Length: 205
Ligand SMILES: [Zn+2]
Image (cartoon, rainbow, N blue to C red; front, side):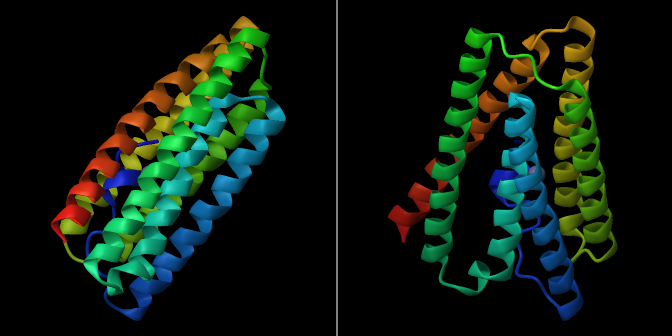
């Protein structure tokens, strides 16, 4: 749930070139696939931090989708798409926080091994996408956003792995809930920024 999901990490400029578009398609597929993997395994393993981490893949998949489709459209449609994305992310953030509260109340202990493995796979997915985008980056200005986006994503994935270690060590769900709560709050803050910006843009249009 990093900032890059919201401000358009590689989505700022229209993609140029067939090869770069193909990379965006691959990035879209990996992120959409990992969203489903984390959502499913987070729910199965009872881990809120995995559920929280999933939203970043959804946000990034949306960004790559926007790069491929919406950037060719009128700016007002781009702003409307951003508004929908912001509202979706905000809703998901609330869902994560609600789930964290319910897990805390029911003292749910997640499966740390599943958390650790999926967290590691998520890290590999993010690193692979970063390497692809970096190799086929569309101009120098994207270098920095790719770097910032990947760094934030990697921090989230490592936080899940750390939470898994904490759950394993303590035998409680506390570390999972703590990590998820932080990610959920960051996600809500980011969603608010996106919604505000999109509404300002729509008003101005
Ligand atoms: Zn991201």
